[in-house]
Every structure is written in C-alpha cells, then in structure tokens.
Length: 418
Image 1 (tube, rainbow, N blue to C red):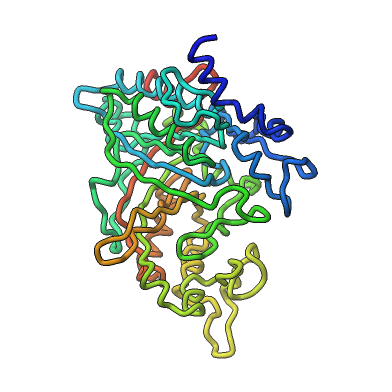
Image 2: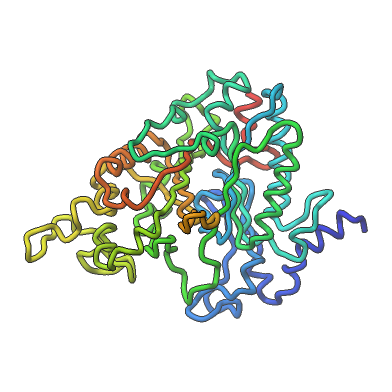
C-alpha cells in the first residue's frame, strides 16, 4: 500500500469507526444536484429530539458533481471560508482552465472524504463532514481571460448604496471560492489545499472566515441565529417551492448557456455594531426587526413560519410591524416578489483598540438574477431600514457561479473550452 493510499484510508477512518453512524454517511443522489446523506428517524444515530447524534456529523458527504454546484442548497455548515483570488500577471484563459481543472479534482477528492496527493495531514481521521467547495467568476475574470463577449449581464456592477463603506481591498476578485464544512479542521484543510493548488496562476486577494451553530448543538434542527441573537433566515425560499428554481438558478437555453443550472452570489461583509444594538431594550430590538427575538415569530403573532400580517394595527392605530422594520421592508411581497436564498456565516475577527468587536455577518445570497433579487431589496433597505443604524457594509462582491460539473468535467469547462 502506498503512502497516498494510507492517507486516503486515514481520511476516511471515521466512516469505519462510528459503527452504525457509518451507514448514515453514504453519499446519495438528489434531483436538485448536490445530495447529502442524513440519519433516518429511528436510527440509533439520531440523538434527543430527532437531531443527528454527534457521531454522524463527520460521516456525512456531499456530491461534487451534479446539476448545481454544492454549497448553494446544502444545509448551513458550522464552519466556512470565503476567499477571492486574482489571476497572476501573465495568466490567461489557458492558465485559468488548468487551475479550475486542478481545483475541481481536489474538491472532488476532499468532498468524498479522501486525502489528495502530498496531503498535509491536517484532517487525518476526519470524515467528509459535509464539506462543500463552490467556485465562481468575478466580472474582471472575463477581461483577464479574453472572454468579455461571454460575460453575462448578471455580472453588471452592483449600484452604490448610501450605507456602503466598502474596502476595495476586500471586495470583488477574479475568482471566488466558498468552503463550508461541519468541522473546522476539514474546512481549513480544503482551504489550504486549494491555496496550494493555485500555484503561480493566481494570488489570494482577500479571505474571510465564518461560523454557524455546530451540528447537534440543539435538540432539533432550528433556524440559525446571528450575532445579534436574532433568528436569521426564516423567510428563505425553499427548494419545495414551485418557483424555487426560477428564482435561484439560471435556466437552460439562455444567451450564456454555460451558466445553465448556475446562480449568482452576492457576498457582503456586514459589520454589526453590537455595542449599540445591545443597549436597546428587547421591545425596541423586536420592533427594529419586526419579529420576536425568542422564537422568530412575527410581532403580529403565530410561530416562526407564520406569514407577516403587514396590515395589522395595534390599539394605538399604528401597524404592529413598524413601517421601517427590517422584516417588512425585505419581504418579497413588498418588493415585487423579489427573493434570494440567504446562506450566511457569522464572523468575529477580534476586538479593536476601542473595545468594540469586529464581528457581524458574511452575507451570501443566491439568485438567478441579482438585478431582480438582491438589488431591489437592498435599494429599499438602503432608503429606510431601521436596522441600518446598527450595521455597516464593509466589503462586497458579485460572482457568477456556473452549474455543477458532470462526471469527467471541471467547474467552468463549458465557458473556458467553448
């Protein structure tokens, strides 16, 4: 047995050591693209309240190949890295194609729970841990590769917003990679492998680290909370919605066929002014958002998933959900049906000299057309969202994320080799 074989065996060792949990981690297919294996109710891998037992977390694998790239509809992972690269001077279409070929091969190996050649050993003994790697192209990628004629209109620059305080050094980029996993070492392992794969072809432009609640930390699956303590993501469109694909994924047959099955990612680093926020009494915080903090239910009553009653008024004659509440302004029915799939990570990058935390949200949203998804909603929020006083948009990026590769393909092959 070679050293490479030993590394691959060690990387998968968890699959054989967690007993019955190993059966729950087999990769399965899904009509939507990326498939995930899950523990079944009644299985002895299921913990209290129906949540997966911790022993199943590492054994879950997500498919690399499929109609859509993984990491879009994949359930939120507990650890994430966002990183943008710029092609090095002298690198063009040929070098970009070779890089995407290397990256795709490495991502495929890592997502299956194996170790690549010349592995660092960072994630030995860990299973795949729901690892996903997602690749996208920025607007400037098409200039550097001589493909401007194939640049989609969806990559037209986002408009400026009055609340923006964007740092260009942490914004945009030729190439974008999103890494997610339910184990921090597995996520870092993927980040390091892809960085090394870049070689002389591309250089890191910026990198951001994020996190969410760990799998198994709650008695049952729940919508995540952000660092303000708010339930965050209740209004997300669901894959079961009849118009989900139309809103989130680019259809086949368009002018840019290479984007079929793909999506557009808007990435924003949003600093939360937590000291100011935490000074607000609970009832004020709830009015800013328009939802109860305890369970995410609308102030108009019901449960987290109850529809907002935007017309309901209180004894004082005022709307129960204030006119400038975040949930009201961002509601699809207030924006001509505009919707996006929000899939963020929280971040905390230390405490400043003034004692304020550098913390907030790595906002990532997905849509078939950002000019019909993100832009109209953000324009409205920019004009009068009560939450704006407590956040600051510090970095921004827009990336075209092509559909998932078929077996034998690499991501972006239909663009780069057409």
